[in-house]
Amino acid sequence: MSQQLISHNHDLARLLKDGYEVSIEYGHLILRNIPYVNKSRQICKGILISTLDLSGDKTNRPNTHVVMFSGDYPCDTEGKPLEKIRHQSSTMMVGEIFVNHSFSSKPQSGYVDYHEKMTTYATLLSSHAEAIDPSETARTGRIIEASDDSPFTYIDNASSRAGITSIAQKLKRNSVAIIGLGGTGSYILDFVTKTPVKQIHLYDADTFEQHNAFRTPGAASIEQLSARPSKVEYLASTYKLMHRGIVPHNIAIEPNNVELLRNHEFVFICIDNNAAKRPIIQALEQFNIPFIDVGMGLQVVDGFLIGALRTTTSTPQHRDHVHMRSRIPLASNDEGDNPYAQNIQIAELNALNACYAVIRWKKYWKFYKDTEQEHHSIFTLDGNHLLNEDVA
View (tube, helix red, strand yellow):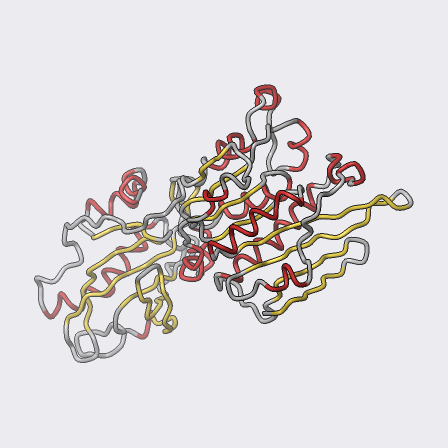
């Protein structure tokens, strides 16, 4: 992907043609082996790193003039720090690269493209090294292949622009499963697709019907509905446009196939058949796999819908609450008295239920700070209350 992106953009291709060691990694533009002088007047090699603003596979004008640097603070030929470009010094990570400093050198009208931006900084640093040793150059002519094994079909420059690439890498899990791709499950898929999970397995045996379109992200066409695809195939074809690792399974998880769940790192249970959950939960506990079960209970009262959304987390470190406090309903349920089962249009509640589940999942992997560590939460619709219980 790195070399394709470089070849498709004139400014990046010029960097490569000029002999710079260019790569695209973790949504950033990288220039390696930039010679510079340290405070001891020694010639060292550093790495210049820039966020990358893209529209699809095309670069935009740089959205910031600041560049990051991996190495000691650069100096002139006398060993005096280059104060004119000093921005800030702090340690952070871009993928596997330690960032030590950032520089600020802004032309009056900004940089027109990434070639101008990166060559400006490369020259500012390397010119002092070349003054000491004329053979030193940043234009080595070596081509660097990106080490980024991103599951995305295009680069995640949202994380790089926000400066949270190293935090986002905490979500670089091998395999996540979603059981049930109805309203809430499909929104969980939408959110998890935006993370660097390598594979997202979908389990559901149902057909994607017209009523599903009204509580699923996006907009299905009449032609797609007429074809009556399975839920998993419809959703996989949609989200494969963004994520390479969507794996559809047009089956329901039952006692005879729960073994399919053994190798997942995390599982979302999003089915409204309570009795079908029991063998799934038993298997996940046996396999030592963390999971989140979501639920929604709604009633019609005086012409209004009222109800609650539930998010229950079970981890190898904290499971007792699921059974001792009966946090997940496992008895057979009568769908005739459940307005939700009648396919009412409540996409916003499905999305909200998915939000709570995915936020909890991200807390488990330490993406978000988790001070409460609740493993069971209830959101009540009419009072807008959120109750957290079962603290680990």
